[in-house]
Image (cartoon, rainbow over all chains, first blue to last red; front, side, top):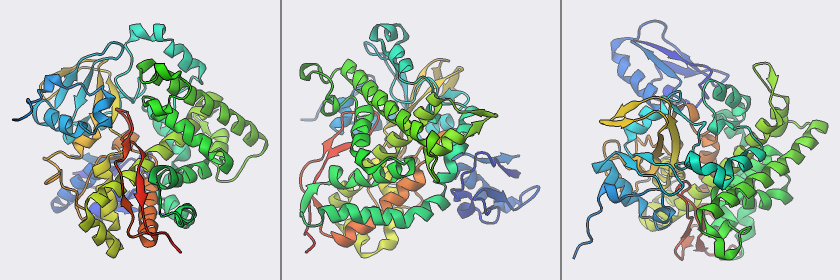
Length: 64
Length: 431
């Protein structure tokens, strides 16, 4: 599973960073950055799914 | 003796009385348990609509803004097309300024318009405003401090969000009461208390509500026409009307109609809903004295308390969408063109998501409520709402820890806004 943030949708609420700090970090411009390029380690998939679900703007894409 | 059981088919949620009398939680519970995708038949002038009451179904719809669109209306079932002309409503609406604001806009234009202003609403921007919000809060509390009692809605809860949004819009303080009055006319249009332009014997009807909303809208647009006139000559820093006048989308300036609708939306959305979360929050805390005491003794509970107040009060009863294609949901056929209403207070009491959902618990965690909606149209002002609630309760309880609600709140007659119009409180005055 890969993760992408749609920058045009992100408004810096930071829910993703809280749910999965290993994967997401808010940048200086308050837009979430994905820290892991390519496939996520299996053990982080559940956290990624939680971040996807929680994002108020639905700015996170999970790519199987 | 038990009351006769209410069947889902008996339930008509297009009746503001259910909401004014606070019967709606029970009706929503019945629908959520027995008919979670419920067809509400048309009224005399209003469309039929689907009532959506499960959390997962509201997520499903909110995640598909291209299929469930906002541009056909976001509040209520809407008026039957064949009745529009006769009510002369469409014509009036066009005359009132034409264009749509972001709340009734669909992808892809919605995001482009929203991005013009959203920098002013990020968590960072909100945090930068906190000292100012605290100063304004204490000014408001100074005005009631000696009194020992007041109408909490008029004198406290309404005043903070009004001051914050009017500040961002560059509205002069002398005009804040006008903005309050016009917001009530637009969002409380179905309540006879605000139908002051209608002869008394005609108040309370659907037509009185439509005319009241229209009058509020037109007066507000007229006011902002004057503001834009001024800002063209005298642009200001950090001023939303100036930002909108200078902004471009796809290489084009916004029309005056676009900007007016934007200003209108920001004013009404910015001051009505947070007001009701503050009033409803104090009400529910006073109904739970143990939790109120715990919160006053330990402000580290404030963040989870605010989330629980938001879940509990759900300041907007619903948002409406219109399907653009046939969709099957829980075995029901939603047809292209059908209106769906997403009932947030029901999602926020969904037993599949929230354990013991009818229990108010300031420590509840996780608390992934949908009080602000989710997705494309997630409340732009959510950060300000949270901050205003937090600062208000911190300062209110610091200065008036024994504040109590001393009479029944007067609730708004609306299927859209979970409003409290008046709420008497008493407290030990400051010396």
